[in-house]
Image 1 (cartoon, rainbow, N blue to C red):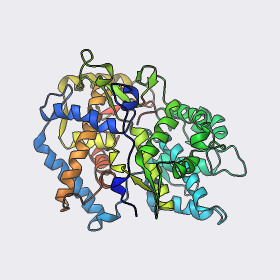
Image 2 (cartoon, rainbow, N blue to C red; image 1 turned 180 degrees about the horizontal axis):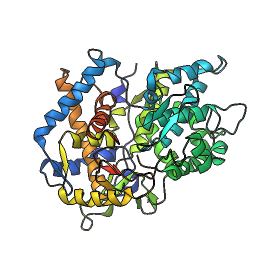
Image 3 (tube, one colour; image 1 turned 135 degrees about the vertical axis):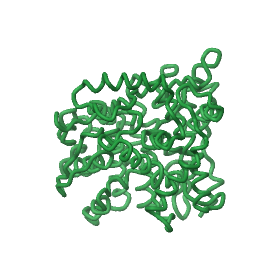
Length: 455
């Protein structure tokens, strides 16, 4: 195999020249988060206090979860991605799907179809709330949360809900998505007044706007399918042909970030009229003025990163594609990883913010279908509390990886990758702590008013 370390990656734009381009790059996430972490180390944050003495306990808890489920075969831990959610209940649904297709469907087309499925499934994978459940039409079993959304999206995919070709239901294309509406998605997700899901309209809007984005034939081909990005990536000048294809992670990132830019809500943060997606002003960043406006913004791109992690898996498994520079991707700033930091006592929300969040929870609890027990602070995704929390999540996940690998006995340069720790430790551990700490709702320690487009 070629020397992967020497494969050149495209550099981010200069923020002084193209601040929007810089903030939309994967490089910007860690670089901007580091400014929040500098304040965290000095305990100068606006909304959270940091108890560094609890860092070791947090790491030990993560290690205990990883050892319980994977010791001693840590190499078997899969990278964090959507594939595992499809296997809820021990049923290998993706393998069964692949086996159901005739031998005439070649490996590249199989990979295209999985990319089709995974992209739609990830876009549907915002928080499902604690009331929604999905009854599988194939097994009759009930599933909830991310796994329930995975099973639901797979069964809708197989039924042809996202395809315009009746002869080929197992694909996603522009025309298929353009015929989608809120009612059709509600039916597919089995949503009723008794089985509500937050952000239904937001999810439907993402998929409908995806139908327009797929008309970019350079990225998604004449048939306007997400899976055609495979052909774009394999033929891209930056891709290196070796014993396996080697694709720079920055090339995949630009496909996902630039190709899907039009699907995000227009209300997202903009610079010079350019939407920069999941990136938000934060009071722990340099204030503007005197700093430039872009310097006040911390980018996360959580769904784009979750999508990138998830799309890498079928390309790696089916076609042995290697993604050079994948370590540029960060830990996911969402409420399971972030909840872990709060529930282990590493960070604590300040009292004045707790009071404000509790008041918002009580107001929200009067709405139909909203939780009214296990009272926790509630904020919108754009609230400064949430932005600071998410920045801390990204930063501390990097620090936890170093300590977790040390505790597992790995030498420097070896050990678990960040996606493996997310999969086997922090995301799973955060969910388990929520189930123990708040058994009725299983909600994280801070509740986010979801619109279905961020988490």
